[in-house]
Length: 135
Image (tube, rainbow, N blue to C red; front, side, top):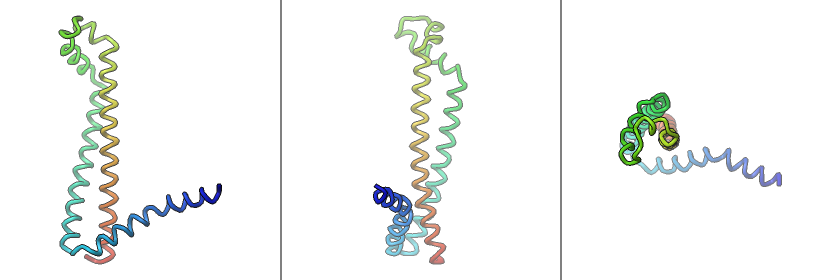
């Protein structure tokens, strides 16, 4: 049992070294211009991904503190439900819809954050490679 745990620990802690070695082999095959182009592309992707995450966090905070969204949803759904807008606005249904929207936004933030971390890892590996080889 301890041998399995030790092997898993070595595998887990060695994953970054494996990523770096794989990336280094890939970068060794590329030209200087291709490496610089990829570095610029990763820089742009990193900035865009970072901004998207901040915007989504702002949207979640807006939804959490906004009763206007419930009012708007009640106005939209009142004709179909056959209930008055005020009753629908105060119903549990509108709270569930807003809660579902918040959950979806939070899942989107998690996905963007995961994407950002992958881009950032690629960017840092390439930056380190460029610094080591003085490109």
